Structure formats: C-alpha cells, structure tokens
Length: 501
Image (tube, rainbow, N blue to C red; front, side, top):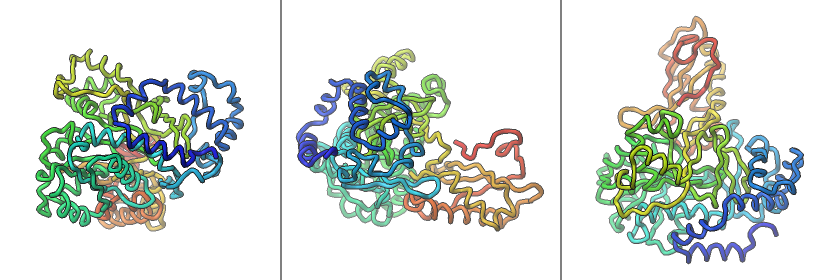
C-alpha cells in the first residue's frame, strides 16, 4: 500500500512520544525543506492519481521538475481546479481512503461541504504545534493542566482535532487532563467548577469571540477565573492586541505573552503555525508603532503573526496571498488557501527589528533568559476570497445573497450588501450587514428584522460551520438599511465589494 502502513504509523507515534520537543524541532533544522517539497512532489506525481491527471492536463512532465525553481513554477491547486474536480479517493495516496482513519468537514459557499480525510499519524505534525504552545508558553510539561476544549464537536475540524492533539500530549507524559464540553457554556462552567480546582492551571481552547463570551458569562456565574490560572488558545480569527489585553485583564493574567496563543489552522491543512511568546511580543510592539507595522506588512491593520515549521507546512507567497504544501492524507502541493498574507524569515524579522532600535528580546518586554526558536514567520490578514470569519465560521457572500433573494425581501432590496464583523465597546463581535434599498423605497421599522431573520435562516441552512460554531444568541445579524447608491456603502460607478474589513 502507498499510504503509511501500520508499522510506520506505530514508529511515528513512538518517535513522537519518546522524543523531547527540542529534539523534534532540531531534527528539522538539518534537511533542506525545499528538497523535502521536491520529494513530496515526486511522490505525489507517482502515487496520487488525481495529481498525476492534474499534471497531465497542464501538460507538465514530472521528470522535468528537478529543482526548487522548477517546483515554484508548478500550477497552484485550489478547491475549484483540484479538490472539487477529482474524486476524493483519487486525491489520496494510492488512490484510496484506506490510509485515513478520521475525517473533517468544511462548509462551502454553496452549502456543499468539502471532506478532508486524515490519519492519526499525520496529526503528529500538528500535535507538535500544540506542544510548542503547551510547553513553551504554558509550561504544561511541569504544571498539572486542565485543557477545556470549547470548539464545536462533531465533523468540524476544530473540536476533535484539538482534542486528539491534546490527548497525544497527555500520552507523551504531560500532566494533562482533557475535557470536551464543546461550545456549550453550561457544560464548560460545570467542568471548570468541578475540575479546575484540582489543577495548577486551566487552558480554554476555542474561537476568540466564544472564549470571550465564556469568560464574561463565567464572571456573571461567579466564577473567579484568576484562581484557576487560565491560559487561552485561540484559532480562526484575527484580533487586536487591545482585545488580548482586555481578556488578559479579565482572567488576571500576569504575563500576556505567555498566557495565550493563537493557532493558524485550516480544515485542509490542519494547524499551519502558532503564536509564540516571541511573535506575540513582536506583534504587541508593532501595535504601538503603526508606521513600523505598515512598513513591515504593507497595511495599517495588524495581521496575525505566527511561527511555523517549514518541514511540516511549507509556505510560499503568491500575489499577496499564501500558498501551502504539506504531507497529509490528501497531500497539498502548492495549495492556494486564499488567505491574504506573507512570509518572513527569522533573520528578516530581526533585521527589521534592529533597524527600528530593537536589539534583544528584552527590548520587546521579554525576560533576558528567554530562548526564542529559530523558526520562520507567516502573517495572515484573513481571507482573500471575500469570506468573513465569525466565531470561526467562514461566512460566504453567497450565503447572504440567498437570504436577500426571498420573494418578500426582494420587494425592498437591490440585492447589494456589505458583510462585515464589528466589535462593540465591550470587545464582543457581531455580524453587521449593510443592505441597499431599491430606488424609491423608504426604510420601514419592519424591514431590518425581517431581513435579519431571512439571512439567519439561510445561513443556518447552507452553512454548517455557522450553524454549529456560532452561539444561537449571536446568529442574528444586525442590519442597517441604506438608500439606493448610498455613498458610503454603495457608491455609483464603482465595482461593488460584498465584504469589508
């Protein structure tokens, strides 16, 4: 068989379980990641039927791809030209699902889900990202730790993927107990009340707005978070450093760079990178210096900044967006993940910092004894394909369009809208949709509630991520009604954008 045989899987697990994190990462410093990608390409060209057909359709002879510059010229694959164009088994090693033992699902713009099979053995690369966070940031190798998984459980990637990787750490010997209440606040509070007092620290893992909901609602439930020494693991959305500081204050954090970490992950590639104390310290330094941030990232807004292992997930930048390669059950070869962002080497980051007066980690507010890991950085602004992330769910404009195309709604609106997430004064996110009215139609108090209800109905019907990630009380969007050709949202003569950051 072409997939990982049982003996290889067993050997991979044994190596992970018996090898310290420092050694695992040091092992990856030796081989050249570019050569590893060439080897993955050769394997896929031979063993993955769909990729063979893809190359043939593009008139590419695999034998001519011998150097990294050759690799860089390979066509990008994406959901449309590859994942949706070839049968699922054909996209796996050996043309079979036999090598996979679990599956995750992501919602598509039309409501048709994409399935991402994987094997437990391939989770080990991702488990190393969790190990970096739990060891380097939380010192969970030395402290008894309760990990509370607050991601939605089920077919969706966040909950079970996170649970599985945390179990791997427990099997490795971390004094870690994993609880899985999912995104049920009452169950989360029950777990915290009963179990957290027995541990030195408690880690909440979930989408940023939901974790904030849990913390705020917990205070109302008389939970004294600070007594449990909380740590926070986020995924799915970009947030500000002011927001991080707000949460740190509410949980009684004394060391902001070490008490939280955001993961950069996707259903197709797993966790691609993770925040580190160094990347957080750099981001917080940049948050106070918008001109420096603009010169580094090219925009005034601040992206998520994480470090990654190029031997696990290999990044390239393409026209301001990210391309990733990596070995999974459905291997990714120059896969365009439609996230706006870029890549910076460890040396590039430090060269930039030194040009701006930062000579050491102490200048970033870290202790002089802190040992940073020499790993490259990837920065992510968010989706480049006009989706909006809300409670970890990708909200597609197409989903909203269906809500506006209901007969009773079409009598009022043109069909144009602007979708965005906003944040109120308390730091809570909500979904806002600006809707354009037909010429001559005047806003009526009954319109906005009817439009909001219609859009919510279609989002729940079409988007399983929205239905399962977003708390029921946060699912109804806030609607603002605007006159035809409104200058702020719907200016005449300009190509309309259906999303806004």
